[in-house]
Length: 277
Image (cartoon, rainbow, N blue to C red):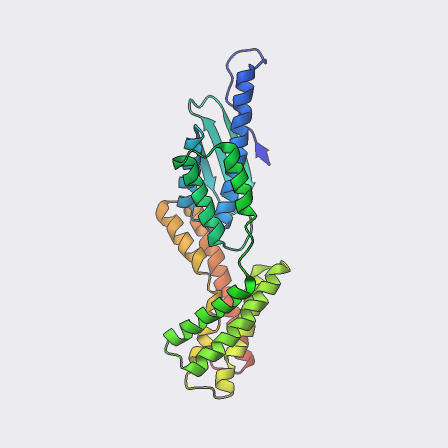
């Protein structure tokens, strides 16, 4: 998976000095480190502009230069010496992982530590390993908070308190199902369809049992927790920065997930015999 583009060594002899060997090995280590760093940062939900700035900041602190091509699922990283006498290139796949603001923030902070505080290369690698081992947030706490947030959306869209309660319970069930299916590595598109279907069916109970006066608001907001807001925002940010390929890939991914959400919602409404218009 790695492609080496060593600096062209002038001279007919194949013998290389010990100093050149050490510089080449160091350049290789830096490239591999920055590649893995980039894969984790992009996988955790960072924008392309943040990735570029962080990597270039780190490369500068290590007295080298880095250039990269960011694709939706791969990163093409090239690190070269200041005089561009030699370089090393590596292609790595991004890490498929849930969006993590904590890892995203810690990785960005690591780049500033290297640039501003003079954190050494070995210390940076050690801290990087600690960061990627960051345990995920308590899933039950996330479950409750996500349910409260979605219920708040229902209230924001003028839903009454009965609808708020129904949305809370439908989100609780749907989000828990999403966590379970994700742990079992089910395809994300199928997860969105199933969870939207379950939440919309439970959300329709407000109208089925005459809970409150805004059953339509309950159904409409019961699936809002599935809206892929971060991929949409990141695609827009990448487009503004000129990363059109990555922007298009993220946008298409977000649109596909939105279509899956809509498919599950429509299936739930049809099953409960609710009018869509």
